[in-house]
Image (cartoon, one colour):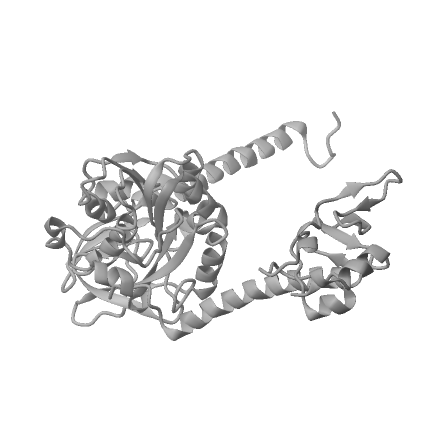
Length: 440
């Protein structure tokens, strides 16, 4: 190896070695300092997060529910008396504190979940509304609900023999310490539902808002899974969000659910500490003949004394919504009617341009028919006999198809529908059309 003339081999090696050792030592010191200053995931999880709060006065501490994503520009606050628990689990921030006026409070990711003073409003509505729409529920599932309030209310129904709860965050159950005599499944509710079919009489989805770990529980696929997991007469209730804040989400869930369920309605639940003091209970009825707003059982006397919110009368009235929401429902109905009208227009257009009769055997005698012969129309009670036999098709020796009266016809399909085209130039057609049989 040839070295530059300005450096001898020994001095060059010593210089590079000193620089190398120095770099290693400096890098080690920087790495050690960074490790000490930057906690691991576990350390960050155990570290007590900060409390979202308003500016304090005179040493008073307020918890403020702030969310620029869910309810921008507004906040509900409760004064903290004592923080009992505040840690971050694998999934979310969990906080429990005693308030000065509302009792014990549970918060997840900075959002109020329950307070001692008003939790019964939500818990009773979510549990008893679907339960009293089933004549005798036995096997029941709660998705979420780790605080145990929904299970507490469902346990009041004596017919229920099996209570299941699927909660993604076991730490919520551990902190709440209110779940007894229930089968606990610690996993994601969406994945759990996909493995069950025709199994549960009642399903209650007590989810947090559609952000974070609960986001998948507001997808259309999850509502399909609810339908599949219910027994034929099953009923579900899902947390339906606030109609002051989440109209697009509510409309999407209602429109999609109506593709499967026999009856879908939004119940208005009033609870002071939730955003805008209101939240929805989306009721999904699978069995036909049951209306979501009409309970099929009365509240037993032994249960009535333990209820502070739900009653048969409230069950019916909670589906009476403000005029603004009634207008939105009307818009949904008009959209459906528009689709039906467009389909009918398409069929009429085809008929008018092909001299066809659709559907077979569903025309009727009218003044127009007396002038131009067969006419497309919906079913009508007064159908002349020869029109009733439109589908009595016979094939002659020359392969011509005729009906029972000898009128040449031809079958053809268009956009998946079967049409009958009648040869209006046939002398048989003219003879019959002018005969007494056409007099209606």
